[in-house]
Length: 269
Image (spheres, rainbow, N blue to C red):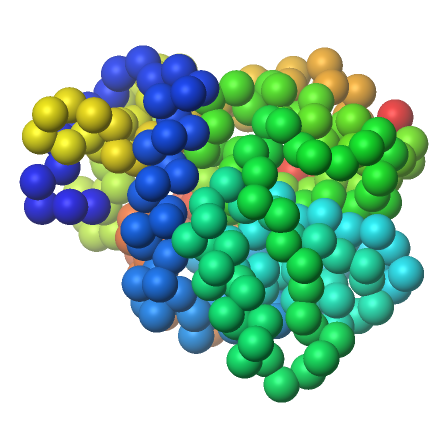
């Protein structure tokens, strides 16, 4: 967050949200990878700040020869993990800066099979035909960064084949009731869990530069059901003893007391 950012809770529609987040991730792409690249790896699927990997949780199933889409892919680390295991994968992201970071990483990876194609696109308007993919996933991408997450779920369902799998991780909705503080101050509820007013950072002129949207667990389930998706598992990963690293408001202190990540595992009906 910029030292000059104005932080508030206010309404932010789809266009303002997309413009703000596209610009923010464009500007932050290189620094984000420099700060978190070692934790995320170059060809690894990490589901959240707790550090649990797909190789440990096995939420996607066997991806060999499967057509796979990662939305909100960032630099495509998760997509590369899939590619290394024989999946036919595409990474997509709203931000041209993140896509450029992914293409640069493609040029530097030592394993040719880990090179993945990218599409720059909005997750609520995916440029793929109906039933194009067997699996769609995102790890902390796209879902909280769009104003209309119900539309995102509908788009995912559209591009999934019947019986296809959708797995996404996001900030656990419970955390929205607490300050974004990794220390003791982050252990006290300060606002309503039911307050869905977006979190907005803005420049001195009031123009949004970063937006996140909150939905409750119930909201998420209703969005999935309305899109024709079936929730088959909801994973609330515990903080592992091996991880002593804080990431923003996520920390060992908080993570050992309440969940920081929610992972939704769904199939298309």
